Length: 293
Image (cartoon, rainbow, N blue to C red):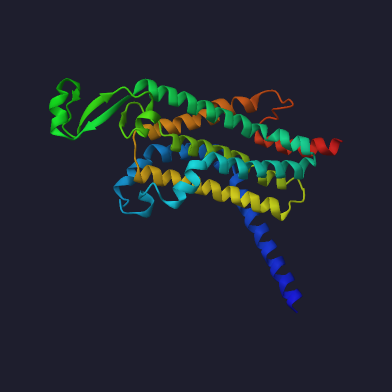
C-alpha cells in the first residue's frame, strides 16, 4: 500500500515538473521574450531609480548586509557559471550524446567570463585615474592647521586631499573617494541576466526535437529560471534602495555592450570551429549532426 502511494506521488511530481517546465520553456522561447528582453532590462535600469520615491528606507532590502546581498550579489558570476554551465552541458549532451561536443559549448561562458574580467580591470583603472582620495576634517584644530588644502562645501564636511594610490587603498584606509564611478553590481547583474535569458530560451525548441529530457535537466532549467528572476529582483532592489545615477545607468549600458556588442554579436557570430560553436541556438543543429553519424 505504501509502495503504491509512494509511486503515485512520484508520478504526480514528475507530471507537475514536466508541465511546469514545458510551460516555462514555451514562454521563454516566445519571440517577444527573445527579441525584447534586453529592451525591457534597459528600461528597468533607466527608470528603476524612480522607485526610490515609494520604497521605505526601513525595508529589510535597504540594508546592504541583507542575506540575499551577501550570499548572491558578491558571487553573482559564480552562481551564473555553475547553474548556466550545468544547463548548457546537460542540454548539449542530451542532444548530441558527445562529451567533447558538450564541453565545447561551454566556450560561450568562458568568453563571457573573460570579458567580465577585462571590464573589471579596465573600470578599476579608469576609476583610479579619474578620482581622488580625501580625508574628512571634523576637528576645528585640523581646519585651522590646513587652510590651504581644504575644499569648501555647503552640504558636507570639509575634506583634505590625500595621496593614497587607488580607490581600494583609499577606502581601506578609512578615507573617502570622489571621482568617476561605475556600478559593478548593476553591470554584472545585467550581463548575467542577458546571458541566462539567451541560453535557457533554447530549451523549448530543443525539446521539440523529440529528445527525451530527464528530470535532472528540467530541475536545472528551473533553477536557472529562478536565478534569472533573482538577478532581476536584486537589480530592482539596488535601483530602488541605493539609487546612484548615473553610475548604475553606465553599469547597465556596459553590461549590455559586453553581451550584445562583444559576446552575442562578436564571439558568437564567428565561423564555427573547435572552440566556438556559434550562438546558443546552435544546439538545435547538434541533433542533426548526431543523427548524421
